[in-house]
Length: 123
Length: 106
Image (cartoon, rainbow over all chains, first blue to last red; front, side):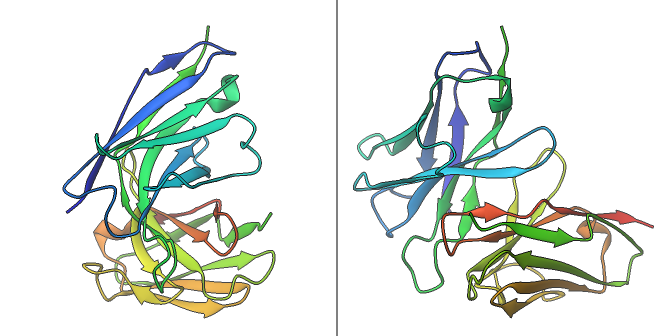
């Protein structure tokens, strides 16, 4: 069974770039045609999809965040990454890395989630 | 943007109750809808995908229905482990979640 684990700084200063890593175990990022997502959950509980990357490097971003987001993948490390630039307090959230089912017949629903990591934006 | 609206926001129920949560999309999403359960301090967990398909390992008391813009999640015979927050999510265009429905003990 695939497992995902987020890692990265828990505190980021305003205007800086938030950078997180998702390590995937129990399966290869390159197999199964999955997409690899970042989703965040603000303290008020709303869930917000940030974007995804395929194993081949194709990306798809939430239009509201697109200008600040970059998602990368390293298939040799079985990891993918989130960079979110010019952060403000509004970017404080729990960040999840999530696998979806890609272009299968039932569509790209989210089937496996990391445990999440809290990132606080504060000076 | 496709907006997803859940109702109610909070639901008080007892063990054994039949519970229904509604999710409405601001435009048609066909059957591209999933439901998730989340407990405090945990990641969401998939219950239903493609509007009505039960994820492997999920108890059969959970069921989903609907298409187009209106969807429901039903829990038939609420169990103590089911007190949690439930989210719908569309994956027709980009990805958006409903605001959540908290199922609490009456």
